[in-house]
Image (cartoon, rainbow, N blue to C red; front, side, top):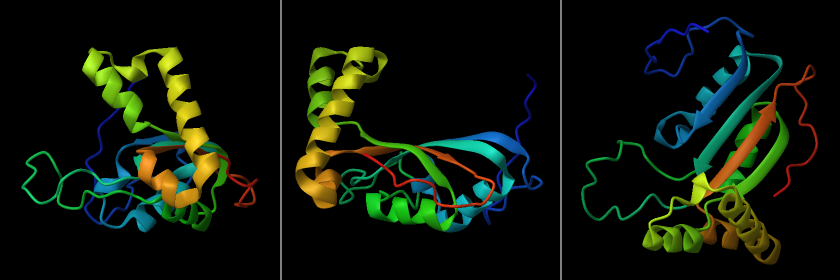
Amino acid sequence: MPCEYVKPVSSGVFLFADGTFDLITCLGTLHHIANVTFVVSEMWRVLATGGHVLGREPMTSMGDWRRPRPDATKRERRIPLGYMDALVQRARFSVVRRSLCVFPPLTRICGMLGIHAFRHKVLVELDRLACWSCAARGGVYQVDAVSVGLRLVARKSRHGGHGRQPRD
């Protein structure tokens, strides 16, 4: 399938007609954008009814900011879980699936062993269970403290409703 690069506009406006896409992927992008709320509303606008957004965003601090970070963007930050939930709801998406991901102890151990944790099905499942277990025991504050990211699948429904409640 042919594709064409369209240079982003700094305002966040998507240069596409309403309902252009069936699928939008946004993996580790929103935490770099100044006006996240507007960009998510643009995603809703250009997504066709019944279309899906697949996303993954960090929820914890992006590292030590006391020293310059040459690889970081000007606006890089985390997106807290509660804020992301409210953002998705405000944009009128229905949540299809929501789960926490990237349990820090697992990634550290795999790193020490020279294993890339997210290239192995068993380790991905272990990560999901570890994040779910921490969430089940502690609530949002502890979830923010132990999980690095949020995976989300959202759908643009015909009525723009909020769908069922998200689940961890």
